[in-house]
Length: 110
Image 1 (cartoon, rainbow, N blue to C red):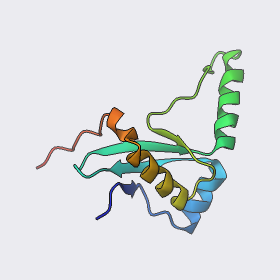
Image 2: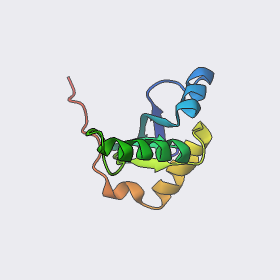
Image 3: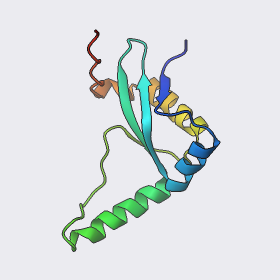
Image 4: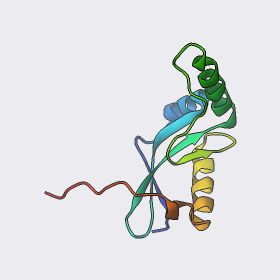
């Protein structure tokens, strides 16, 4: 088995892949490394990230916005595709990016 392994919340079939590209973000992925630790990641494309940031900043005047966008494990890639997600995760893993994150706690065993 080659690490890191991406675990998708649902299979990225044609419909889910199209919806993901259309909305510009996807939060249904965890990354597993050799020791079994898993980390949540959140993918954004640059266009959607810019739109969301602009909306948040404009919302400050209306009392609901924020001056930033921050997600744990946020990864911005040019286009949301499974291939781009895998390439990004491989590079980040190689760079030691996951070393600074706290893994998801393991579920208790029955």
